[in-house]
Image (tube, one colour):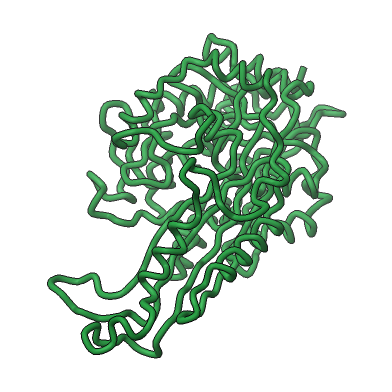
Length: 445
């Protein structure tokens, strides 16, 4: 189990409500970044905050005294998802609690626990050895949860300071408890806002119902048109650039200890669903999707208010796979809804943000090194997987720094990242420290 001081610091980190999507949290974002900078500076890093039009990026560098030592860059993010609705949390989302060996807090897994395990690993190495065996860079983003809109500019401006031999990202999940994994691929993403406008103001549904189009009903029709009866996305051209899943890779996934019943237990869903003709893992890891993330329309208070609402809106996200392009998909989404619009309403589709899908060879020298470190730490061979989630920064790091990241998860599939009652196993804080030490030792060799 983590030591008392380690746990105290971890809890301090989790208490920052560093929600990048919330404009009211600007001060808390800045305070969290300043705390991280101070923590890394106390470990002897040249640590600085690099301002952006949004939250700052934390960049910390410490050189090894060894001539010719390789440079490892560790990326993470300190921003978290909103904790709404708070009523679904068993304990306050920014007041961490330990129950049954799990830390409950927003950001516990995504991404504070995983990143902090590496920082604590660096602290443990320095306490034991005094100096680092490699040059080490921490690059901590404050806008990952909103697509890192300003991160690319920091990468370009600080390219000389970020030159490295290897990149490590711990922002994914293990396949199951005790089973380490290296994620070879991530899905990309496109997020849009869909708005349907009708009358200039809310109207009495008795006086005008049947005479004017209802934006709420029209929004429901548009959203229902997103998929066909087989669960495929019905947008023309949506699948044009989709890379088929390699049969050998799919065969490897079928050997994993994956329990679809556990998915039902973890999600509370009554049944699995999705695109026909694919397994659950294939749908999550290798196929694109269209999801409705939120709907706003009309009166939703107590009792009745018989109106035709003036506006209705929805937030949508589309997960992409190689070789889909966010820009191409965004244009096809906009064209689809424009073509579907009824004469009595105006439909506007606004692009919010996006990120490219990612796939990398897991058999590079650093990739093999990380898998050896995972075997030492967990006592089992790491399996090769993909992740259904999106980390647009990973493709950006490849583009700007010329290095593919190795993705190693310390979370669990049922950690409830982005949902209520997010968790991180205390044991994984210890395992993350041990993994970090094993990576440093091998990379130095």
